[in-house]
Length: 409
Image (cartoon, rainbow, N blue to C red):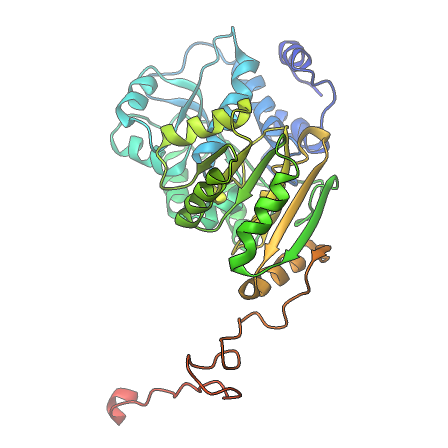
């Protein structure tokens, strides 16, 4: 494929001898200096698809990077994904002059500025912290010749569009840009048209495709019965790792405490946790010290832990594409996995949206689909006011009337 022998040898040492489909199709045009759009389902090796060409070119560059500069930049939406990328690529350059640095929120900005003072070959960053360092004058992107946007669709979901524009304007226009993701919404197509030049588009699986080795199922269960059902299912495989996804930070933390009281070895990660707490939780999960990780969507991407056998969607995600990313935390590196979803009465719309994205329904494990997405209140029809008489019709909202004609005009 045109990769340097030293990189191929390092891959072989790690037991990697055959490229994945996304790597096969993306690496050659990337090595040619072409802009690339890579679309592939999660867990298919996108990090190496852009990382290997970057390391190949950086390894051939002469001299050292100038102080406070980065020759190449990889942007990712979450701290966990940034660390995953850096941890994947660093072993490939061990013992060489190529330096890889990462900057994320939740860690000392002063320490990160000190590390960037002498310059770096490859910088992996979250957009927000990179902007902070740019504002401090701790890093300049004027000499950055390579840009990678990883999981660009999630960066748009998290509202990083303005940060991306600021960062892109600081880069040299004479650069190579690559964009990798699992989905390609319309807004990202517009982003690609703005920042990429005549890109090669590589797509190895349709958007919304889940890994074929994942066995999926859904349980129709009320919100109040979800914890008991989850405990019942987790109890059947206590020796195996499982990730449980919740929707909110507070709800995920409450669920983690409930599971802990039941006797499970549990850790949790979400936005209210410090970076140190999140790192310790992931290390314990990787090491097998805890078997259940309760998380919000901060863990939906970037976690590459082959031993995860089960993923539970305790709460269905608001964004249907996130379902694909969540269940992609299992069945890694060719292994089998199981993904179980719980659907309460008020989550039917989310389930329908997931079915639409996937192009097929999730097999039902128990219960029956709820007839209405809105739960029935006691003593009335859906939408009836609390305390209404049985059979009462939902109250109609009155259209607000203008106070006077001039205001209406």
